[in-house]
Image 1 (cartoon, rainbow, N blue to C red):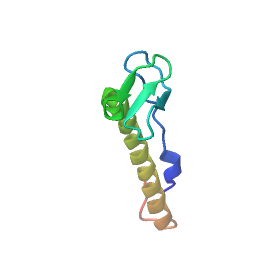
Image 2 (cartoon, rainbow, N blue to C red):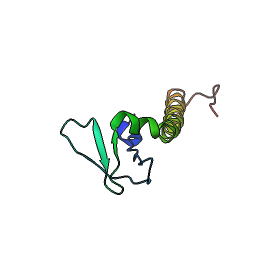
Image 3 (cartoon, one colour):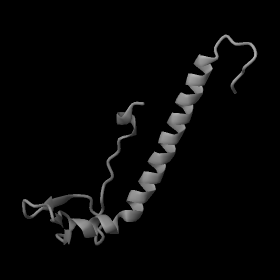
Amino acid sequence: MNLDKHSRTIALQCPTCGGASFESETGEDTEVKCVQCGRVIERDDLLRENSENIQENLEEMKSDVEKDIARQMRKALQDAFKGNKNIKIK
């Protein structure tokens, strides 16, 4: 399976203004600053505020991976029994 096909980037949004651009004020990346409104927020809090969006994307990705695996398994079974007159896979 091609894992790059299922790779995604989820844009986190500022809970105050909805902006998606952040910069780190310190080199440690524990706090980030929204470029639009200037709000400083801890990275963990930002992730917590965006947890619904992250979960939604995760569920969508799970569904895509499950469909891809089912498609690959069906193709593998069809190839395995190709030419057999007694077994048909729908």
